Amino acid sequence: MVTKQFSGSPEDADLRRADSLAREIFSDVANKWALLIIEALGEGTLRFSELRGEVEGISHKMLTQNLRMLERYGLVERCVHPTVPPRVEYTLTEPGQGLRRTVHVMCDWTHEHIGHIEASRRTFDAS
Amino acid sequence: MVTKQFSGSPEDADLRRADSLAREIFSDVANKWALLIIEALGEGTLRFSELRGEVEGISHKMLTQNLRMLERYGLVERCVHPTVPPRVEYTLTEPGQGLRRTVHVMCDWTHEHIGHIEASRRTFDAS
DNA sequence: CCGGATCCCAATAGATACTG
DNA sequence: CAGTATCTATTGGGATCCGG
Image 1: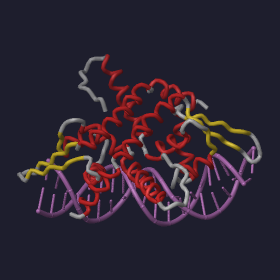
Image 2 (image 1 turned 120 degrees about the vertical axis):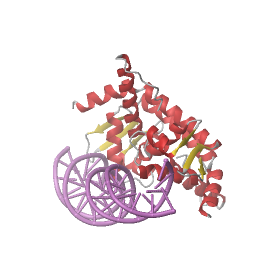
Image 3 (image 1 turned 30 degrees about the vertical axis):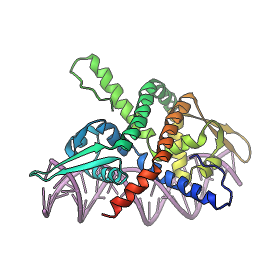
Image 4 (image 1 turned 90 degrees about the horizontal axis):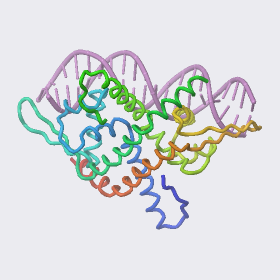
């Protein structure tokens, strides 16, 4: 990922570290559940249980796990209302919104290529 | 994902099917290895072993598995040279290039937000 | 030799039950 | 209701073998 050639020079150490950090972040964020959660949140605010309904097929555990990660990365904000029963709301932060826009582009790409992919799969499976 | 409200009308059945298909495709494609492979391929052609070198940390097995999936989806082309030793080259197809452009946007987003994320992680971990 | 298939073991995800 | 813990099922990594 944008991995240029590094010389041994000391100022390249920063570049190398930034690059490996970028890879780490990308690896965490670029998984289907995280991206689907971000897409589901959109511009609004959703409760834990609402999110669970929106993100089709996600397990309780994966939802909490990914929400924690996204919160830790400062991409979603977690707001706990100390009521009974508890009410926890999740919202995308500004950086989260930025990521969401890129996810949206991917969703558009997916919809545009459903036909091609379906056809390709069929011919592939036939052989 | 773009999940509108569906009525029970028969023409909505197509929409619903397209939507679930889109989710399936998205779930397959939106995993870190597939996206990193696509990013690594870029506009060029790489051999299996070269790809293995480019995509840091990927296992032999995951590479073959994801390449198969991408080939099945018509996103990468697989070219086998019947030589000894064998030489297998992978290239992005036109739709694959389209996806690559969206991946690139995500990579850019990642690099732009390294600072914010790193800072956010630190404060999160401190509590 | 290179790319891929297979087997085994560790790691991760899902289901379910339990707590505040 | 939201989150944690536990147990089981599935998946991924690593070593090894095979076919060209």
